[in-house]
Length: 75
Image (cartoon, rainbow, N blue to C red):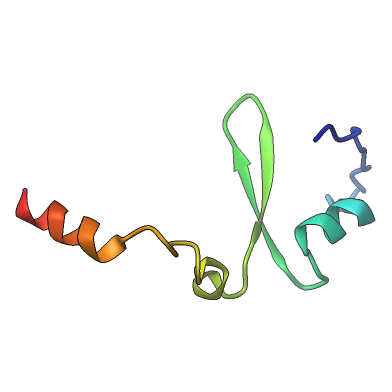
């Protein structure tokens, strides 16, 4: 999926407006928190979910997690 670049302007107070398309695509709503990750070369902005446990619910489905846990404990 190729995405066209989008731009925002930083205000004097350091505020940035998030493009509506990005907010919709990632489910970002007013009041949500964002994490800023600076690796020295680039900056990534990552949405911080209000309930990270709920966001992960169902992700391990079909992974046979109990068997993997027991196998790891045997080693």
